[in-house]
Each structure stands twice: as structure tokens, then as C-alpha cells.
Image 1 (cartoon, rainbow, N blue to C red):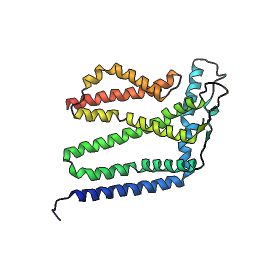
Image 2 (tube, rainbow, N blue to C red):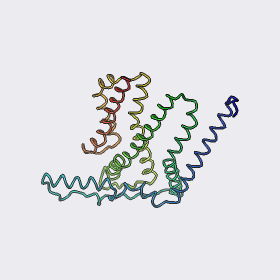
Image 3 (cartoon, rainbow, N blue to C red):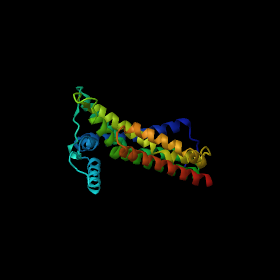
Image 4 (cartoon, rainbow, N blue to C red):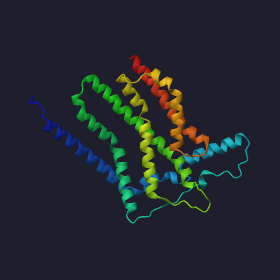
Length: 268
């Protein structure tokens, strides 16, 4: 076994190999996703139709609540009545969107392998205790980001799309929503919620660096709650308080979890 020091160019060559493996695996999953167009877009375009699981669930809850209080169900719109027709306005746009969505799907499926390869490259430079913290950090970040993605897909985006897709300033102004607008909004909200769900992880990092204390977070809890309500109102511009609470309560719970994590970390 050679004891020769590893040069900068050796590290660069190893990093290039990591990127090549990541690109190949992502491309393979992307090609597979591209080939399975119908199931892929059945998932991506699910929230445009009233049969989507979130609409059905909350429609049943609405019916149950109306029955419990003895309210008249006449005139209440059911989930099955909802449908927004998407259109395409450019010649090659559908094919381009198909490729983009396939790449996104391939990257999501390959993300555990991507994280593993990056960690495998970085870990030799870490001490044993640093490696342990790095594992917790990487796993925690990945889990929280994916929870944010799922929360966006099943809760945030459906209610946002349902409100904005059917909102009219006047009865004679019809909505014609493009496929590009739908996909870009879905991707943007998914990324935003994925980042927001990293709040506990970022709080842990700042607490480890002695830059954040739980007393500070507790002192400004009321300000943060107001900020969460404003952010929730921006993300889901619906007119009902129920949807606002549906979005803001999980974000508030994330903040409370962050306070607990920082408190435990400060004492460690």
C-alpha cells in the first residue's frame, strides 16, 4: 500500500469520478422516468383533478362536519366537481416539459445515491466525531427536505392550485392555465417547502456553533408566529382560515421542534 501524499489533482480526479457516477445514475433514472410518461404525469398532474386524494379526503371531512352540525348540504361543491383544464401554447413545450420533469424525477429517485457519493468523498477528511455529526446532519437534512416535498405535494400545492386555478376577477374572464405555469409553480412551492422544513436542522447547526440559544427563540416566538402566518398567507393565498391554519400549524410545530432541539443542544 502506497503512503504517497494525495495531491490536489488526485482529489480533483476523484471528485470528477463522483460527479460522473452521479450524472450517469441520475440520467439512467431520468430515462426510465421519461419512458414511463403516463404514470409519471399521473402523479405530477394529480392535483388538477377532483379525484386527487387530498381533495377527496377534505371533501369527506367537509361533509362529515356539515352533518355533525346539521348544516344543509345543498349547494356545497364536492371534490369531484373540481377540474382545471391545462393548455399548451408552444410547439415543443410539452416535449421540453416532459424531459424536465423526467430529470427532476430521476434526481429525486437518485438522491440517496447522490448524497452517499458526496459523503463518501468528503468523509475521509473528517475526524471520527465529525463523521458522526455529518451522518446525522445529512440524514436529518434529507428526511426533512423530503417531508417538505410531500407536504407541498399533498397539502400546499393542491389548495394553492385549486384556489388560483378557479379564481376569477369577473365571470366573463376565463382561466386558461398553461402546463408550463402549472409545473413551474409546483416545482417552486416544492423547493420552498423543502427549504422551510430544514428549519430544525439549521437550528441544530447554529446551536452547535453557539450562535443560537433557545432563550432567544422563545423570546421572539410571538414575532415568529406572526411571520409564519404572513408566509402561509403568501404561499397559499386562499380566502378561508382553515387552509391558512393547515399550512401555518405545521410550520409553527417545526419552530417549536427547533426550540426543543436548540435547548437540548445548548445543554450538551
